[in-house]
Image (tube, rainbow, N blue to C red; front, side, top):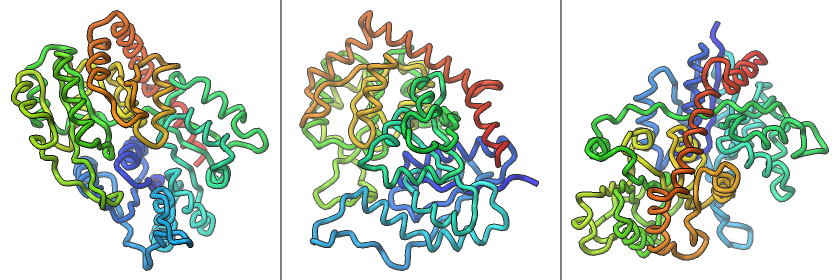
Length: 418
């Protein structure tokens, strides 16, 4: 009889995508997999794409909670959006409990770190529960060691184990620290399984206009700029990026999203950007032979693995980082939110896979910085050294997930304990 696995991702495309990749790994090992989702706001298109591409995975959407959690603190001030996310997920426990009770048999309940309140449901139903950490092992090690978030993170100690979307040869020191109990010396850390990189194979968007455009470009000649499903910039910053790209003289493929208005609420879909209004006058016309600007979205994995792509300007979200690593590309790092600054430090200082776009922590990254860094990565000896490091990391990533590789072995160990 096949193992039955329930996956519960956190909110946002950045949490859904790696969980779907994890579902595919379970399928490869003969498990029946259901991905449970809260009612999505901005995820509808992403869920539809994933469901169409993965018919063997069952997607179940929980209904909205009977009563929405308070959006304000007791003093009337609005709660931080991260607190609101945790509150909203906690409010889903009633419907989550009802769904899990309807499943005849569950061999593993795998929850995103954002979904820690679901532990209460798992304990009530006596389900074997595992955490899935969708970012770097190094970030996990830091978070487990931080007293300020210890109350929520210590819930992970009540799990049967932690699955991490990384691989040992990429984060040797962090993995060793986690396994040796150095992050939380006063208690036992559950088993940690590095099972990544969990990255889409791509190939589902062969007719997309940007891929046809890339087909006409020379090898390793295009700089790709994309800042994740939540990455947006004000008009002034978009103008500086445009000026820097144009002055660099290099080919580029750039994904632009509409800047959110003052009344924007996290999770709401943004309208398509008006490129003519957001970018400098004449920019699109002047760069039409060397650049392509896309509205809102691109098939990122396909773009990164295209022979014409030569570098990746990224927000350092972990999914994007791993996609860049597995494509063997040098990274130009522009962290924006969440743990991305830590990822940037790891990419630049330890892995030597990227460079920092200075000014990301200020109001504006200047056009001169964009121009200079693009030229450096694409033209200099230092850029060539980055490419060599990137190619080495790509090979290590491939080794980790092949038969006998560290991630394949780790996942087999995890399955044996179910």
